[in-house]
Length: 262
Image (cartoon, rainbow, N blue to C red; front, side, top):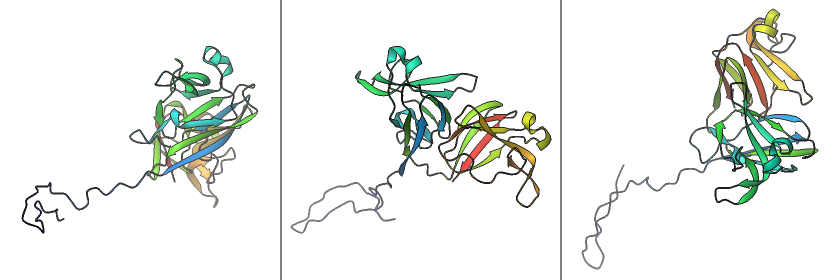
């Protein structure tokens, strides 16, 4: 690779101007990040299970930020009564509890101004980050809206996969892409899958769940026994049961990981 000359000769006489050798490729800008968004309908007076799908452009790695969430059709609460009347994001802490964030009209931004935003328990605008693929509950008080929307925006991951850890017990996960594989999780068997098999539980919006079990004797379309996620009949599920942006519980008796692929 050639470098620029360190001297310059004038057409009107000889002069010497020292300059730094510069690679011919320096100064070529990096391609801009690819951004995207996903808007989901949310129901007032109900629990909604959703997930972070896009990365925070200001963070390193595949991290999502609460600051990238926006809403429409939701009535914000106020700080003093936010625990009872404000829309609420609940992120599972892995130990049986939740971290709470409230949509209020009197949150304080970094400059000390009151703004309408998602806020932490202290009332400050929330800019916390979580791993891409984290699921969360969105609790909407009945008086806040009948229907509204939640928009997750940010950078589109350039990786072909996203991996999240699965705990021994319950993990609230989310689907940033459209396909999922497992690592380190021990499958169960069909006859005892309700008690010993890893299980994906997808909220149905009406207080119940749709269940899918990770078993070693699922039947594929050709009638062969395979290890995979199966429905209640024991048939392998190969279609989309949880679209991108959907949150769901994963219950497992062994730790491992879920890998989502584009």
